[in-house]
Image (cartoon, rainbow, N blue to C red):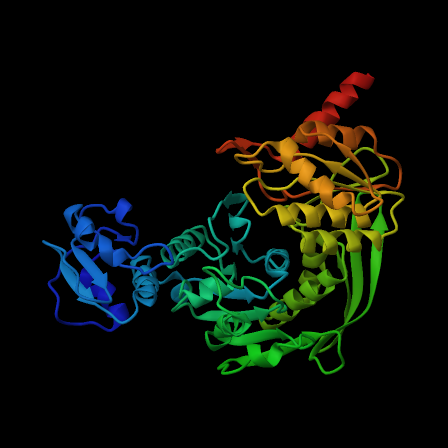
Length: 488
């Protein structure tokens, strides 16, 4: 692509020599001939220090915030290279968000992934092809591409938007993380709708946010980037989220002041299925039945319904979408032959485990069994807390491996037991995760709810630095087949 075409996105029309740019690169280790290299400042390194290396490797243009030595390459200065990377990348990939896709951004501390998949399910039920970008990866059709971050680098965002457009998608539903918004990874995207789920303490300290105020302000940025903001009026921080907003506002919640209201939330249950139902009132009126358990998912469903109402999606598609939605690794039901319920979930800390187990308790299982491990080379306090939480809330804990990394799984289990021993909770130890799953299936009783926690959407186990294939859905199918053959 001509350099002039790229630089027009930055408002630069002179002061450079025209060249053909082969690609845009922000990692000096990935420089290729005739590329444009953007110097980014990060928490661990500064791309300005590698400008000369990039030029020697073949970069023909360097974009930087300060003068750098880059023999043989043009150096162009800009005030903010993070924003520049986002705008240059959009131009390089043909501005798909401006010309071909309607992009929906979802921000909030909890519920982003589930809400995104609910919106996706509603859109597809209405006959619209949509992609998803977020924690689970990039979903286009039935294909999922893994991502390193919920909201990846702006170049990757634009690359995947291009893929969606080329695949015929009309919409992209994107999780807009606070870090992604803060670091300008979605700069320049004209969001059709921005959705706010909720706000609570998270991502504070270290390389993330310095305090809660910055965290809130980062999320609030979405509402000066979208046409319409759909916000949870019941959340105490909604005023801060809307501070400085430039969008139209649509509110949802279970309070009477919301434009789209939920009421009469109740449980739906049968073997192999846990869900919720509630009444939608206000600007719409119908009964929503959601195929995911938990009262908090009524809020996620209401957010998705409000978003799709803004987009003009018919009610029937909303009803179908929220009833059919399945989110990989988020209280995900797995078919089993018995009269019990088997679920997969990503809960991997005490807070998420508490939310999960308290929710499942509401469905009054005969026994609530929680199988879980803990990550290696991570703070031990997390293991103590998870053990205590499962010991307090589950009828039985099955202790096993997760991603042990460079630690011995037996040592990790001992730490988990430290927490369990603070309670009267019962437990069994089965270090091999596959055998732990087998034990759960073989000992299941009618009316049980069994949750395999920690892996969720992950399809691997990381042991001694190696990621080994381990998809619990596949493992369960294999074990059930072996059990059936053994009985025959």
